[in-house]
Amino acid sequence: GAVVSQHPSRVICKSGTSVKIECRSLDFQATTMFWYRQFPKKSLMLMATSNEGSKATYEQGVEKDKFLINHASLTLSTLTVTSAHPEDSSFYICSADLAGSYNEQFFGPGTRLTVL
Amino acid sequence: AQSVTQPDIHITVSEGASLELRCNYSYGATPYLFWYVQSPGQGLQLLLKYFSGDTLVQGIKGFEAEFKRSQSSFNLRKPSVHWSDAAEYFCAANAGGTSYGKLTFGQGTILTVHP
Image (cartoon, rainbow over all chains, first blue to last red; front, top):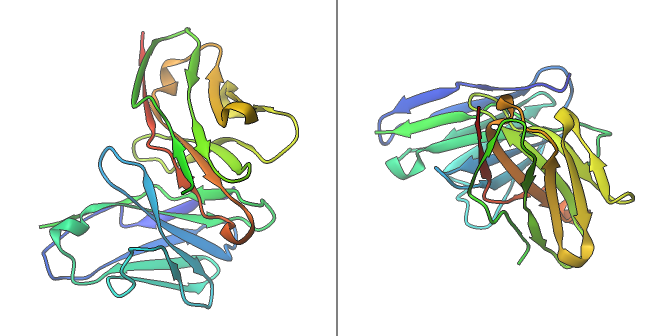
């Protein structure tokens, strides 16, 4: 149980285009989902916290107009990287909070974004 | 600022040897502490967590961790490493309260296991 999927697992796009990444909780409902970014040989950095039906809360330094987050249902959150540039190339990971597990998050396998 | 530090970027051990991965945290109060493992193509998997109580925490896959308040540490241990343990390990912390769910990760430690 408590499986989180991400789609796509890998995407390559041209500079200036937008890319949407989906995060789904497959067998549970997630009130809260989190989006992280992982740079090569670096740790995971929290980008934003996404609550179903409300606006995402972004961490300091994360451009909310660049990284659009939508949490339309209890099982789906999306991250859209708008007008992507090569510096946006990274590994994006989502996680979902399992209600009642208090503070335990379940992570998706990640999406590798490469912007040419 | 709140932070989590994993001093060892890369550790190599022989199969069957014991393992200890270090983690130190810097928080005003004791945070909630976690160890995750990340394998290629897999999501981060929770190995164990510490909230309060017994300072020696047992996790999955034979891992354990010991919380030491005096040293602000939460080191991960395994008495006998298996080749399948080769992966990257992350220590993480959360301050709780209004920071509910917001994990701060250490830099990660890559574990290589020699046969």
